[in-house]
Amino acid sequence: KAGVTQTPRYLIKTRGQQVTLSCSPISGHRSVSWYQQTPGQGLQFLFEYFSETQRNKGNFPGRFSGRQFSNSRSEMNVSTLELGDSALYLCASSRPLGQGAWETQYFGPGTRLLVL
Amino acid sequence: TQLLEQSPQFLSIQEGENLTVYCNSSSVFSSLQWYRQEPGEGPVLLVTVVTGGEVKKLKRLTFQFGDARKDSSLHITAAQPGDTGLYLCAGPSTSGTYKYIFGTGTRLKVLA
View 1 (cartoon, each protein chain N blue to C red):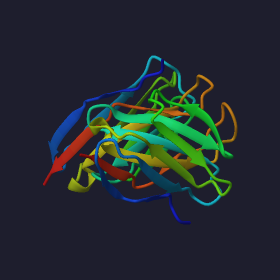
View 2 (view 1 turned 90 degrees about the vertical axis):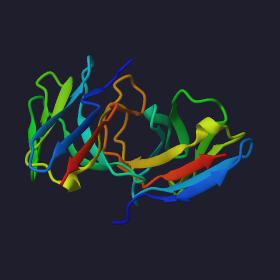
View 3 (view 1 turned 45 degrees about the vertical axis):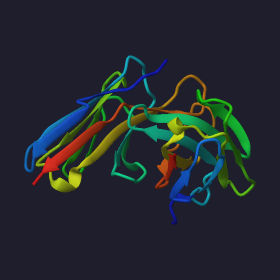
View 4 (view 1 turned 135 degrees about the vertical axis):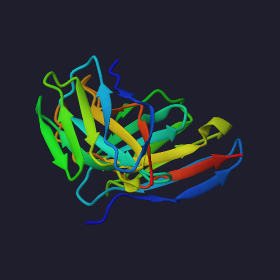
């Protein structure tokens, strides 16, 4: 079974630009979560989508947004990029059983974003 | 706020040595997962522990979930250079939100 795929793998942008990252979950997985990973802060939760609905959001500014399509593929967008947005952005998919019950998360390889 | 603290933060050992990584919390988790992440890649799931006191083995790696489900450990026997990487523990938030809490990470380097 194919794993989680993320595109692009690497991206270089300049301050003030915006960027869109894409994630295709494992077939049959309907939950997609996004994380930001930096050396200083570690893995931080951005948001989670299930059936095209954002169910939870981490403590990030409104410049970070996302969406999920009917085929469970997801995109995240960062507008007005700042130098501090340079990070590895990871997507993970799972098949949540519902609130209080969890399935394992499987991660994609990530998109390495560098903001100059 | 649920937190997962890992120790040590960094570990550099010689090939063949044994080591233990700890993941601790003051909160109860319904399950805990351990991941290994190599540079430039996403975390890869190693194991999920669900039952308090549970012990799982994966070749030279032994994972244990604390009886109270507030802590976990990862023990590596006879470490090899291929074990080098960032080890992360993670658990589902129990606050009713659909997110995982990740530990602070342990960066392991095994020298040949």
